[in-house]
Image (cartoon, rainbow, N blue to C red):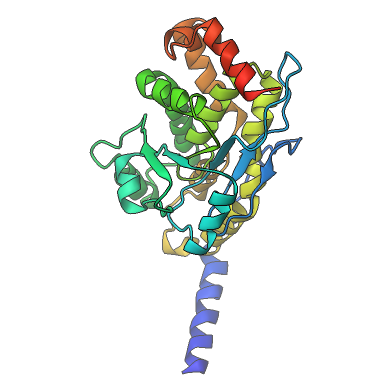
Length: 291
């Protein structure tokens, strides 16, 4: 039996070498200044706290207030104390209803859980997209455009939901954790908006956004390598689609801010009109979360 297994493994490996295309993956852009503290919570990826940043007024963001991460479906009970030690008493889930049904968060009972989705998957679009990818009907360029479109739509299509999310975070009485699936796109957009409201400069905001590539590097490289080695299972699939869906890029966040400026004229106008945060209220938040 062992010999048969070894022969099978050798055959598969040989077949892969002969049939798999060698993919050329782009080198993603990483955050240059690791100002955030990555927190080693088992089975939760991209868990970190937003802090150690200075805004354009020279005020520093208070530590241990904003926490962000990927989904908490695999959070072990043995890690519940990690959230408790951080003082986190509220979790905001940014995923849509189908994502939550498939992988619900596993949380201590005492933590308040809220879900605000600014993007709903109508008509099983995600499942249909996956099937198209496996059949080779979607390539890397298509995936890139879909990411750009998603960022544009997320900030503009449901401003009421974005307002609710932002208000919930800024009105929190203590440390709060917000997350999506990977903690990079929806979570990245919300973080970028929060930092914009608190008057952090563009370089700081983009650096913070790109840190998702730093903290997810090992996971993404492992997935891309596995997909490349097993490409013979789905030979029509463009693995660069997976690459585009795994990293964050400046252009994606550019698309979100570009849509805001196109629709509202400026980010300041978006903050006042869509998020309904007045100049005086904005200053209150700056005083609350910076020193």
